[in-house]
Length: 78
Image (tube, rainbow, N blue to C red; front, side):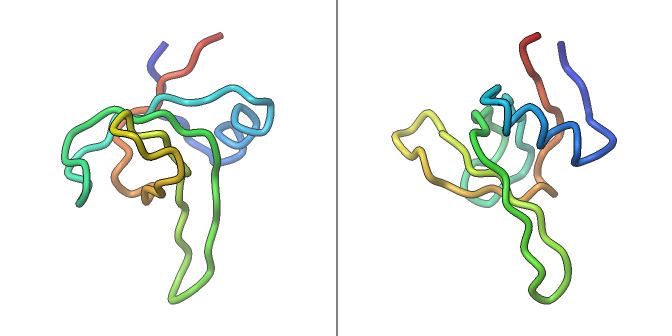
């Protein structure tokens, strides 16, 4: 199922219930257009509000962070 969640709360519920999310990134600085698996979520309040996902990128990094602005679609398993 491919969804573009409207609220952060739904995303957090999946991650905090140990249900990873598959993110489609578009034009991300490190990844370009690439799928990653989100296993964590962080919010920062420095020079504005920034949401970041902790991701496993499939290239060997399991602790990379990706800005929410680059997420085009979120897929999850029911």
